[in-house]
Length: 158
Image 1: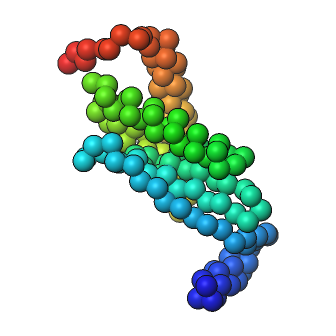
Image 2: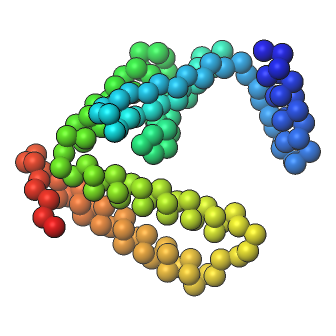
């Protein structure tokens, strides 16, 4: 515990030197939970329970996604169960490999956008406008796909 307090102190000092305007350190319990759907597919969650009763829940794999701030442990378990049940159901679909491929590409796009934003050089505004237009089309396609969902198991045509 003393070691982590010293580390926190050093990190917080450096962050203040970098210009941090507020740092609030609360004792917390960080939990990493892994569920194995199949040998080749796991879902991992991280939840942090603070002494002030605040809980933060994030899915870490297959891709990072903040799930929310459950009010209590019952809601925490319910949120994990709902997300996990969705993945168990999705995993059984023939569409799952394609879904994961799209998800991986979306994550790669997010990382590339982050690199453009935080990189040392400035992105070309025309390129950014083109990317924005393309993303609008992708979002429109997601909306269209939501309207085409069915209770029948789809057959993937290549």
